[in-house]
Image (cartoon, rainbow, N blue to C red):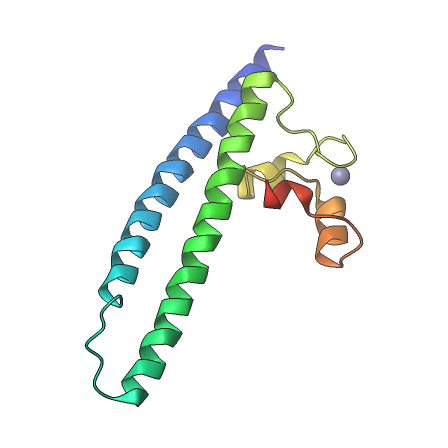
Length: 126
Ligand SMILES: [Zn+2]
């Protein structure tokens, strides 16, 4: 299974790289968000824009946090040797899909079910 080992290393590298990127971007999102944490707002219209921007930042930060936790879970699975298996149906996740989204816990079929609301997204909330 030499082949599998080197593939695993490639995914590990990808995940670590993506993790560093998500962490950096999360930090800058938090820093950006702080800029809007000011009380001296003059115009109510400005205030509306500010709160909209804050909300945007917040949801962006949440996405990054979610991605980060997915990446961490994927790295755990790499260490446990269960990486590449769908967390839901335990089928193998396609190599193309892993290359595009190396942190995905689900195969394409289960992901579609989640998006259609047919399956619980428990992994995402963890
Ligand atoms: Zn599946």
